[in-house]
Length: 159
Image (tube, rainbow, N blue to C red; front, side, top):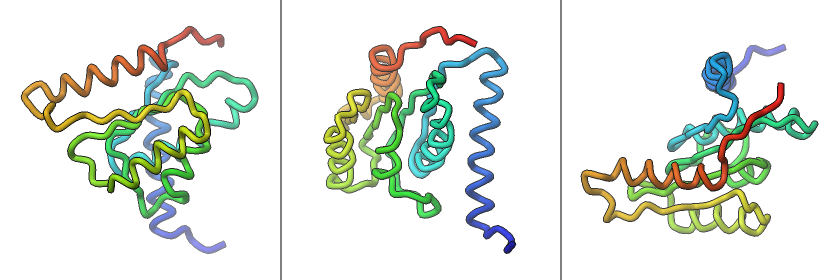
């Protein structure tokens, strides 16, 4: 068996880091979790969540939601971002800020694909450039909090 490549080792390390963080939160009694990923880390968050889906397919409630902020393709990811997102069945907020480095076409393609799959728990929100005042962080926080309250409000899980 050949030794794993540096890219494979890196991929595995990233997934282990997410698992360690989630395990820590769950050990503290936090079961309804929002995974927030910015830029290239979107690929790692999605890959980790895809690993969790077999339990969800067996009827086990997972209690996850995903917030992407200016998600970017990652050259180490096994799937394109749009393809990977298509497989996730959880509340998903795709937040676009004025710092987004994707083309307008890429952002619209991602939203269009999710809507064509009738993913009601998906929403793409743009934070306008006018929000780049001193209250920018507050604007982002309010938008995320409002979306979570509507789409991923916590509920008590059995177990």
